[in-house]
Image 1 (cartoon, rainbow, N blue to C red):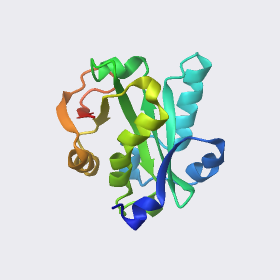
Image 2: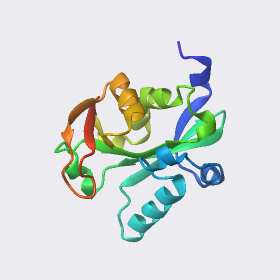
Image 3: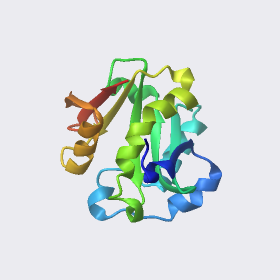
Length: 170
């Protein structure tokens, strides 16, 4: 049975109606070093789209219908810097509004992510989620390990040098 908090949370492909809420939060300096804020994410995706690359899918984290976080599922060209699996997706730029942190939302996001991928992006035939995490980001490492991600070494490709490669087989 899902917790009452989980019932109030959902993942959705990003919609324009989520943007204002996502642009309204800032992260503390110690988190900014590890992820991109939604505004930066939107700029990067727009630049890629302008070049014909539509492989980065922004996903909004909704809590009680309000967009409180964002991440990207990416199957683009730099996926090969993280894994040889052509059926993997790269999870990047996860952020959650600090007002909602500490409630287990990150854990809930990871728990419902496989079903979201299967239902909403079946065309990718994903059997693995891969991500990079900074060695100093102990909170994120703890979350990912708890969910089922395993460490596979370090990325030595610029600009990701030294990030821990973590994979979760679905």
